[in-house]
Length: 80
Image (cartoon, rainbow, N blue to C red; front, side, top):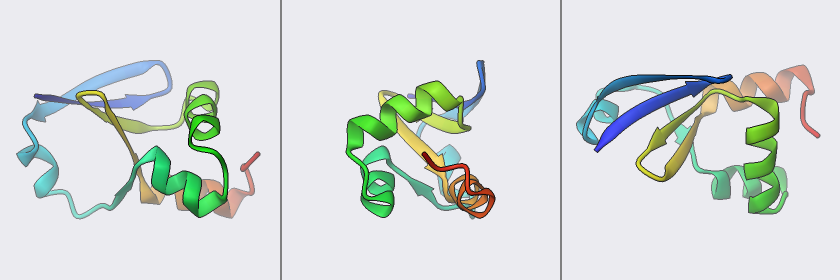
């Protein structure tokens, strides 16, 4: 399984298999976890991610959003 980092409209492959994420000290949130954190519907988060071109990692069909990116957005007040 390949891992892709999606930032804006660019996608960069950073490795193969889940082991590429194991050494990362960063934390990631799934769209469902982010929806719970922001009290949004999960589909609203998915639409927001597509619209806002937020940096995220695609692991197969799974989306992961770096917590650092989420916290930066929260600090800037760019939610909603």
